[in-house]
Structure formats: C-alpha cells, structure tokens
Image (cartoon, rainbow, N blue to C red):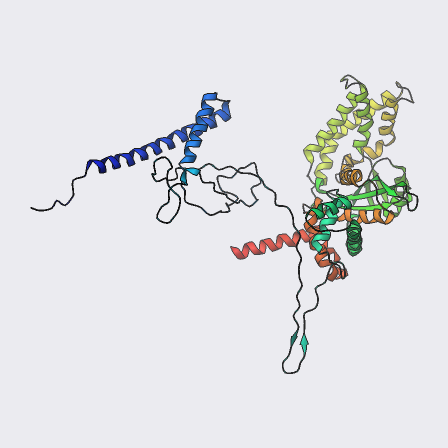
Length: 525
C-alpha cells in the first residue's frame, strides 16, 4: 500500500487556516473602514463638522489601528523636507527626526529574533496596515562649548630645529570670548533687545557665570574692531543719489549726576529697491548728545544729492547750501489729518476724512508702480498722481480762508502748503519716494530696545550702539542673519587687509556665500 503524496488535512489544521484567513479578512476590512473614515474626515474638514457618532467612530478606528501596529523596532530616521507626510504648516527646510511609537499590544510575544510582535489577545502575529503621522515643532536650546587650540611643537631629530604653528588670531587679544559668543551678545542686545544683565542671568542658568561688565568689555572691544567696517558702510550709504534721514531720542546716563539726559540716534538709509535698483540697501547710524542741527550737518557735510526727511529745522542749512535737495514726506503731512479724524470720532463727512481719502489715492498710485524703474515711475506719477496733487492743492487753498488761523485744522493745512514744493518733488523724479518710511522703519528696533535697556551708560555707549545698529540693521535689510554675519566678520576682520574692508560689507559676504553654494552645487551635479 502506497503512501499518499499529500496527507489528508485534519479538522484542526483546517480550522487554523480558516482562523488565519479570517484574521486577514478582518484586517483588510479594518483598512477599508479606516480609508472610508479618512475620506469622511476630509469631507468634514472641507464642508462642516460631523456628528458626535462619526467622531466616536473615527476614534475607535484609530485606536483599533494602533493596536494592529507591528512590534518590530524601527530606528529613528530623518525624513526629507519634501516627504509627503510632513505638516506643511511647519517650515519645510527644518530637519525631521522621526520617533516611532509602538503599541503595548506587542509586548507579550516575541518572534524568533527576539522582537516583540504578538497580540496580547490571542497570540497571533501582527503586521502593519498603515500609520498616522503628526508633527510637532521643538526647540533645541543653544549651548556653550570650549574650543582648545592645540599647537604641537615638532623638533628635527637631525638639526634640532623646532617648528610650531602660529597661534590663531582672536577677535579680542588674549580674550576668552570667541567670535560667535561676541556676536551673540551684540545681537541679543541690539537686535533682540536683551540687556546685558538679563543675558548674564540666562547664561548662569546654563552654568556659565559671565558678569555683565565683562560682556560690556567684549562689546566695546568688538566695536573698536568693527569701526573701519562701519566707516566703509557710511561711505557707501552717502554715495547714493538719494538718502532717507530721521532721528529718535535715547536716554543717556549723565556721568556723576545719577540722572539721564536725552541723546539722539540719527539714521541715514540708502534703499532704492522700490525704484527697481539692484544696489544693496544700507542703514548708517550716528549718535549725538543732543539734537542740535550741527550734528546732521556734520554727518552730511560731504553729501551731494536728495535728502528725504521730516520737517526738522536742522536740515535747512543743508538745503540752503545748494548741495542737498529737499524731498518731504507725505506720511508726516498725513499725520495731523489722522489726529483730526480721530478727534471727530472718525466722521466720514469731516474735512479730515476727505483729506485722508485724497492722500490715500496718492498712495494707491505708488502701490501700482513699486519696483519699477525711475523713468516709468515718473511717467506714471505725472499722468496719475499729478492731477490728484493739483486738485488737493486747490482744495487746501480754498480751506485756508474758512478756518481759524490758530486751529489744529489750520496747522494741518499749513504743514502741507508750506512744504508743497518738497512734497510734490517726487512726482517729477522717479528716484524719490512718496514718504520717509524707510528711515522710520530703521528706527523701530531702537525704539523697542529703548524700552528694555532703559538708558545708555554714556555718550561712548551711544556711539557704540550706533555702530552696531549700523551693521545689524544693514544685515537684516540684505536678508542676512545678523548674528551669523557678525560671527563671520568677527572671525575674519582681525586678519583682513584694511584696504579691502569693503569685502566684509553684508552684501559682499552674502554674495560670497551664494557663490560658494553655487560651486558646491555644480560639483555635486
């Protein structure tokens, strides 16, 4: 009697096969249900909320799916920034670190390799049927480190000549602070508006005790190192055909009196990007112990061109010299009308509301031509803004005889009429802006810092602040990280030739970085 090639299956084996297939069918149904509910959830998000029953069903399916996750441990991985599962509301350029969370259902059983993979309910094997991915933005705090510069001494075995590498230069001679630390202290104070005593407390929490007087010394020595670069920045700024100018008060401690006086920070901005220029923008700051006109007159002694500024009387001598052409600011002309508008509870039929609508029409023209070359801006302004300005001029003159000479309304009218030629000069020159907001934006950081550090310690501290503000704000105007820029400059400037100082200006540093990235990209290709 021969043995059958295929033994007859027993009832128990058939039952096990059925159980396995039933489990597979159940998993497939689970996957179908989950896909259905994902579709319903998307529909709910787009067309309105669903019922509580649907919410409960979604939660049930998600819990059930979690219990069916495989137990095999997966190593943490970094997902590419363009992975389809990332949260597009978070910055795509940030690195992704994946953390895989396994359900407790896999804890009871192990496979032949020792990996947990069994179901706690029946002991059956688990397999992955999908996954849910969510993202969380996390912050890794900055940290200190100590760099040890080791310079081996080598001696020739024949002639006993000793060789040793030269000591690397430091931003501060014999100082312990590296360029990155000095840059961080500077940017924290003058860009992030954190006073030195607060920085000292922050560093102490990391176990690093740095007295604020020590940091003040670093800032002072770093500023001295950067002085030639700030001077080069000033020369570049005043080489423009048009410069924006403004000033703001800063409290300064009077030596020996225990009181504060009011100093001034002046800013001169070169930014012709609204007129289609490719020249790099720049902001140059200067400090003075008071607001006498002699200070801006000294700053702009060699300047030849258009000065766009407010109605400060200190500019008049510059205009009278014939070397500087005045361009007034419509934002300042608008300001008294806005105050009047608020005083009338925003009455739309008031004269202030009418004036604001007329000025808004001028700004609407500017919005259409922003970024265009000067000749296009001039032609468009003459065609569109010219008639609006003529109508506004007639309207203002008609109001003069109808209002009290001492009223706020008369002052608002007089501000524009007295400066009408300077206010309308932008119409016939495409290089000029309608307002002086470029300079006012450059002073916003100073105003924020003023509220945090309360006062500057001395006139020397004011001059130091002006120098650092110049580099920080110019770096921001050129799309650079101020701290990264200062770190690069402080690491190089001690050994950099003074006759090539322009190479360290923000836009040149940025250009070098772009060229390096292009070189690396071409080599990789």
